[in-house]
Image 1 (cartoon, one colour):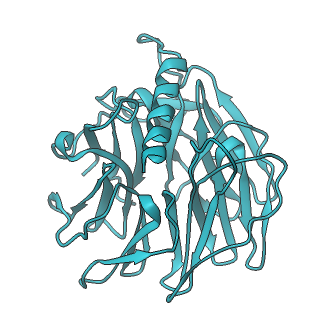
Image 2: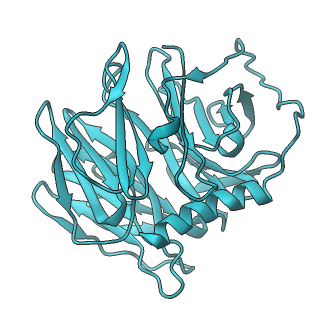
Length: 338
């Protein structure tokens, strides 16, 4: 556990120490020029710990998860109000949430996964691993991928890539890559035969339904998260002193540094292809389809943001906390368009 705490704190500290604080410099111009957007607090998250992920099965089933290193927490929006998730098993920090149909999966520290079907009880699943699981994505209830690893380990490399077949979690065979790396941070796909994972030092892997292979990204900066609209439109974000934005067009990745923007942690892409990115200093950025130009939105916070998600109706939620400091962490969850 201590190593995963150190990684999160080191990540946050690196973003703060190395990031360029623009001190109120003008935001980049937005060629689309939509109406100004101001985010506000979704609920009082300060005493809950840091929140790292947001995902919803619909407008009345939105989850945000996180907690403290020794205690995971989850909140749910039911279409009217936010409330803590009832009946959650005792688990360490919850790093990510995703689901399919009426199944919800949560990836935790110590190699633990939580699972719930419909209105049934939450089940604590042991994967056989003890490293943090940073990301999870489900193509089907019996086709789930989880990724992780100890990015702060001093010696050796042991990135995690796990698959769940509805009964058992097993390690997938990692492909040969062109650089050493210790962790994969997120996994996302468009279907069972098109799954992507990104991680430390800009490593990206792709599953075609039969094998995993490396896809070069053009960056050696950590890639923290990814999302997309389909096989030819996927966005990944990361970086440290400056944010990095990478795009997958179906055949390869192209990446650019977003000069003047801090490290980025989360991304969600709506059905029209507009991407929302979140990162250090409370940054919320909006990027048009196919573009590498980002326009800022007023998040109302300077606290590091780690995850973002939205509905087709325009309800968007972003979550984060004081991850650049040692725990106990203070959380923040903001929203717009409810």
